[in-house]
Image 1 (cartoon, rainbow, N blue to C red):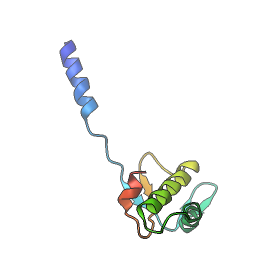
Image 2: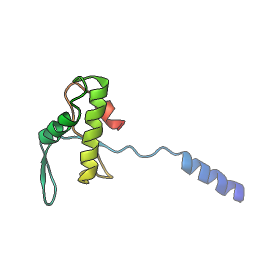
Image 3: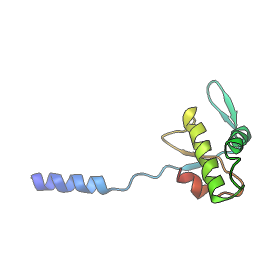
Length: 98
């Protein structure tokens, strides 16, 4: 009986996690109290990432890291969906890795 329980726990632990759907947003993000404009978020992050060459790997990493921080800071994210704000010249796959 203990072996069956152990095997069941191992199988359950190895099961893949459900994949969250991706929502690409560009425009406005409305919360109950505030409206965030994605272009404003990108402009704020561009200032933070000014030391990098635009569209370089370092710049894309910096931009997506900054955008992810803003999303987390204002709790704009969701457990049900993965929000992405696209950056021109950067792959969306880079954003998913941040």
